[in-house]
Amino acid sequence: MAALSRLSSALESYRGRDRLIRTLGYCCQLVGGVLTEQCPARSEVGTRLLALSSQLSHCRTVLRLFDDLAMFIYTKQYGLGAEEEGIFVRCVSVLGNLADQLYYPCEHVAWAADAKILHVDSARWWTLSTACWGLSLLLGIARSLWMVLTLRQRLRSPTAPFPSQLPASKRRAMQAQVQSEVLTVLSNLADLANAVHWLPPGVLWAGRFPPWLVGLLGTVSSLLSVYQAVRAGQADAATP
Image (cartoon, rainbow, N blue to C red; front, side, top):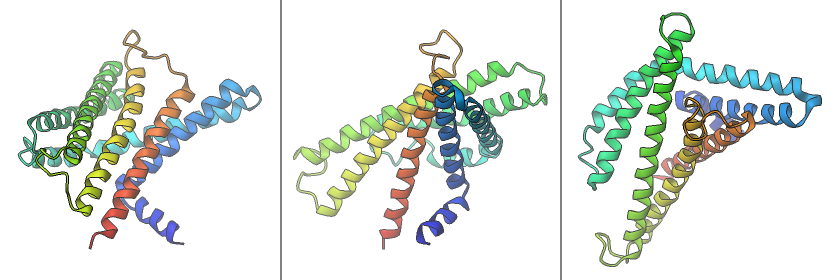
């Protein structure tokens, strides 16, 4: 009952519901892609799962129509990152926020074009939105790698801003942050591989992934995101 209660609480929030829809969508694409490619006898089931995956993805696209304001408020509050310690982290974070902010209107225009609401070329706007997403992922990877290197240096070097003889609680918190940043890098790398796949043909490996591989990468990224959210929730619950 406790697990069901936590799941119910997560589904009451927008982010929790989005994580579940994303995970289910990519899982359906993974299984559906495998069935259609490797199991001809079950290709009909695989086709249905791929269709379900497409509808779940469309559902997330529609829900993101309302994310612009929240992203704008976050970007405004972060500003130029005055609270960050390093100039590199500040610059990368500001650029990442800008890429995220641009992603939403580009996707909205692409969606409206597909829905025949706007008479524009949807392919061009999907490419722009995917490019913004890919840039944001690249910047996020760079930021997380820098944080991992910085934190490990502080944990090991006696000449670092934080001495090596740290309180046990402080060391555990820094080690937990290192683990979180590593998971973020892995999640972003999986998403970046898919982002490149959705770019126009001719760009690196664009268009070359089979559906099951897209589903696998998306599932890995989604599960890592769910795991991090669960860990963050447990940490908040344990904080007095």
